[in-house]
Length: 505
Ligand SMILES: COc1cc(-c2[o+]c3cc(O)cc([O-])c3cc2O[C@@H]2O[C@H](CO)[C@H](O)[C@H](O)[C@H]2O)cc(OC)c1O
Ligand SMILES: O=c1ccn([C@@H]2O[C@H](COP(=O)(O)OP(=O)(O)O)[C@@H](O)[C@H]2O)c(=O)[nH]1
Image 1: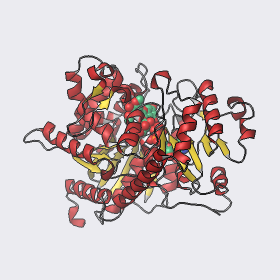
Image 2: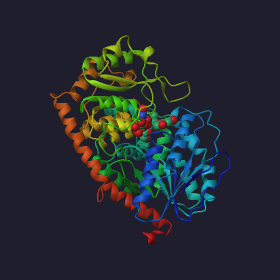
Image 3: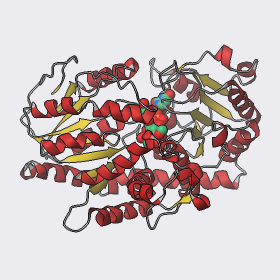
Image 4: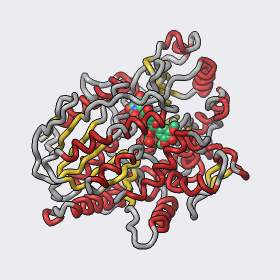
């Protein structure tokens, strides 16, 4: 029972569903939409007969047509899922013209959709069990309050990042200047969690500008939600999660219900290591991996917005890879067109140092466009992952027990990198010079790769062991009786209580 209206300004119900519905309002970008959508699907099937449907509202990213074709693909793909899912494109808004950088733009873009979200919610035939908004979209909570609907905030990143956002409103009052100038160089986050060195603060938290103000704003508004859904695994971040629950209770104060925290990660990934014959449709990257020995290849991939580097950095990378002697699959992208955060396809002949492809032929593949990362990570030939530390990439790596080398670029990635090395121990550290545009010199990349992939490195050995442990934690969490499984069940129960349909369970 899947339908979608065709976009445009008019909202139509494509197929009325009598079942109470959970409405998702995702941000249509590769690191937010797929994980929220997959979680919504898991919510339906984990409800054990809670008899709810799913309705997804799409904010049209008119500035990024590729993303919208990804949405259209998703709708087509789901047509055969057999789940009770409904899709709606919200009317396109006029893009914010005077924004102050990426986050300010995206938060305002979402905010402009409030009247459309309200109209769409009001016109639904099915009773609304809950509305789930992206964590960049807490402005939409005004609408859920006006309509007296229970709201949940979806956080597709680490509990550690969440803890920092929750702490931010108080921190903002305590610290008059920029957080990066804090005396002693460390930010005290929540009691019971280690302080965060200012050098690894997420980009928008460094300076008190409009982007920073948005995160303070979100930190306050999270408290108004019935629940906060975090795409992490409780056992990966236990101390942080305990501190978050305690902080929410204390901040909500007497007589007010604190939002419940649901840890439901990781979103489903390819379930088994794959090798060998997959028929004629095998992707070139996977076919190449089929010919490599087990756990011998290091993957380098930098998310949906990364992968393109200035020439001096590219030369250091090529040099480091060549000198390491290890096999590699490098997803290299071209510079984004002006005004877009997304990279283009790379022209390898122009970008790579002369002779590099010839010298590394057979042991290296440079892939110039979007790569099927989840399938690549699942391949048994992959033994290590140099990642920008976007949270989805982190979870995809850990799901398969692949040890990491962090190469953070922006957003909360430096914070994630720190957690991976210093707290979880699943990664081999590499020196990334944040003040020089996250520059890594060839010798450092070579050292980190040898550590990660070599047999005689203590650091690599530890990272491999810890990554294998993390894999077990992730898989146990989603099994029946595991923490994420139980959390998802509780979420389904709590949502169905709002609309009085729990009796169907
Ligand atoms: C998590 O904190 C931050 C996230 C972002 C950010 O901004 C952004 C802007 C866009 O126009 C398109 C995007 O796709 C996008 C994505 C994005 O964050 C990514 O999200 C993931 C989960 O939130 C993930 O963990 C990645 O690390 C991010 O790349 C920006 C930001 O400051 C610059 C943040 O602090
Ligand atoms: O070439 C690519 C680049 C990225 N991804 C996927 O895009 C998502 C990126 O999300 P992440 O949070 O890691 O980083 P972001 O893109 O937000 O920086 C992940 O699911 C990756 O598997 C992919 O499939 N192929």
